[in-house]
Length: 243
Image (cartoon, rainbow, N blue to C red; front, side, top):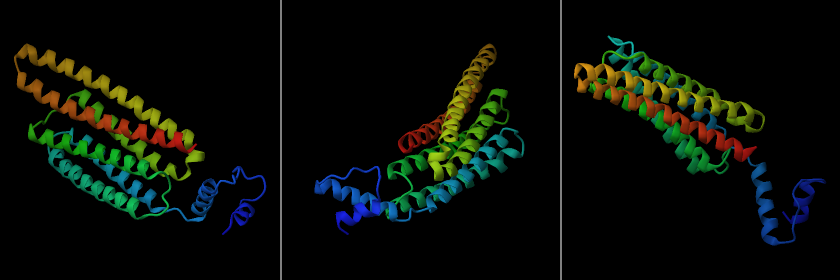
């Protein structure tokens, strides 16, 4: 197709200003061609599939903190959902390489799915630490942080389908990012309060091991929320680039 035909297809009043420079005209024709090509929609289903695994893993991690028989049963759920998330991540990365037209920037797709996967990977590490150190009792601050993890996971699950309509859902996506960042700040406060209380309680009794174990659990929980904050930052960046 020649440039005159391309001009005609764009129609009068189109925002593109055509240049007589062959390189510029070629670039505009490529953009026009890409606009006509159907975008691959399976990415959104893969993101949703991954987010469902993340939410289920977060709920199971929180359930572990009820202690008793819930520990081992929900530990296995965390492991299984992490495996499901890995499969979804692999499928996304393969699709990025094989798909001609992606819904948004390939780098953003990779960054988003990787950050989501990092969150559930950290949940898995937290669950493993709980079993490794034979933790059976959990402080109110630990449970609060686990509740925060569930809330972050649910916000991510809400947010990823909205990427289908970034233009119209930009406000909600930005709000979700802000809420996750606020939850991350709350988790930091619970982390610091929990450590302070643990130090005071165990220093008085000379139980350094209990403080060490508690510190490990707090540290892992904080890292999970930090990974969700990474997801929020990437979502926000995608909104900025596409609105």
